Image (cartoon, rainbow, N blue to C red):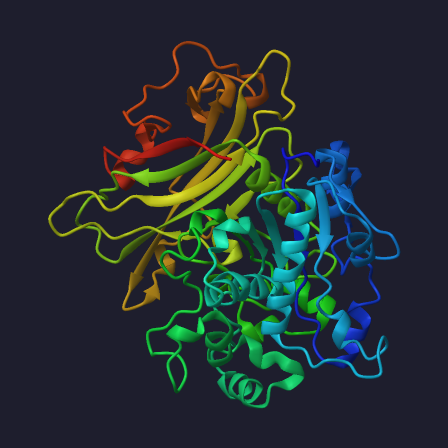
Length: 502
């Protein structure tokens, strides 16, 4: 039988628009997931250094041995083979039935039909591969098709989605719909009311229809407190979902001519940052646009987050804890900026910056003087099988942390005291994690305490102590350098939590 060590991967593409867009989409044998990208980095002596990303499909083939099986078509391959390998990639070609170039009677596209067709594909793949479940990987609207399968189609059949889907990864999916910024409300209402090119599928009323099981739907549309982003309790574990969030709206303007002014700067050019997330899901922010030559799917950042979420064996979470800013600083608000880089990769895995309109807003001090709730900084997944230097067997990543202050009076920034993009505190936490096979011992050091270059550092001595007695969980608190105490309080630190991931 097929290799059971890996699960099949099913890709689901995004919105194509009206008939002409659908006709164009079906001409691509892999619905766009085979597209790579190129760009130029600055190398030594200011010389341009060419960088190529081959595409997520080719990289999964090269890095993990996945196969793309075609015999006149993937559907034809499935029809003519009783057994297929589990380490295989499949494209859900849901738009084919709606293409006018392929049939004289194209079927009107409905998202629920695409979700039911996805279930048939998943059933066939599981049956012929012997795999217990599949991974779903989706771009944009494709994530809503997957959620319709998980939240509506399978529950209506009385089946548990976790019996079919292992992990679910989304690139720029509008989990909260697509909304326009202030001043464009009239355009949004017109789009929802008319369903221009089928775009009403991103309106809350329509989303309620295809995300809610028949037994739970109420007449008259969604309740006032209904949030389309939320995965209902008990349906599918949110921690098995990963949301890749884009923060570069400008490049989408260039590629598609849709002004970022319509959706606002806190977006990937089409989907607002807050709408691209499922509460409780894993997530990463990357400075990429919704699609196009500098898009989420055809990016190294997107691929590296995908492969580690699917195949990594350790999950590492970083949080700010013990925050107690000194009192008496009326009008001062604090923000954190973070970047997360993993050793050996050519791009950052996660970044939330004020320049990208997504810094982390730190909570105000409590009236009783107690520390604020922990503030999530970043989550990353590490792969014990990743290449490492011969003399440094640990898995290393770096967390860049900057704290910035904003002083306001009556909502207006005090420019006489302001230094633009200047951090009140900045440092890099270098984290070395022992491979999963030997147990997650962790060594940490702040860059400000290192005498030389970070790449020269080799952790020595005893790893940090484990403050969590529970089996399978390792946790430690790393104090911030003393220079941060006047800003965040003497007890502020970074709490690291390492857990196995499968």
